[in-house]
Length: 136
View 1 (cartoon, rainbow, N blue to C red):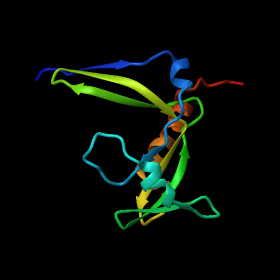
View 2: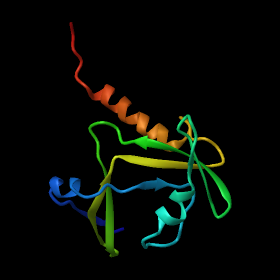
View 3: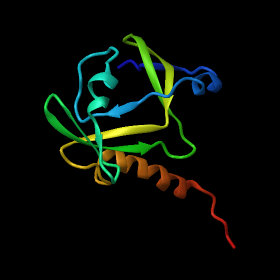
View 4: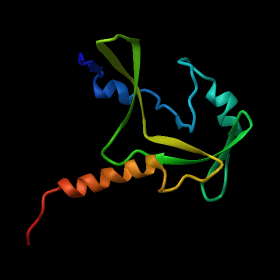
C-alpha cells in the first residue's frame, strides 16, 4: 500500500491573523456540499441565546442546542482548504483562523461527556504530563 503525502501550506502568521476571523459551527450532521453557505442569513439570524449562555436553534425543523467554546490559550484554530484531492498527494492551504467554535448537539445541551469537550480536556492533561517537574 502506497503512502499518501500531505503538504500543508501556511502563509506568514501576520497575514492569517489580519483577516476577519471565521465563524466556525460544529454541527451533529454532515452536509454533502463543498461550497459557501449563507449561514448568517439562514441560520445565525434564528439562533437564540438564553441568560446562561446556552444557544438554541434548528436545522430543517430539528432542534439544536449549542455552546460557544474558546480555543485554548496558546493555540490557534486554522481553517484549511483543499483545492484538488489527488490519490498520492494532498495540498492543504490555510485560508483563515478562528478563536471560538459554536458546538451543537441534537436537542441536548453540550456537556463534558461530548467527544469534542473531552478532546479539549486532553490538551490540559498532555501539558501537565509533559511539563518539567520542579523538585523543591
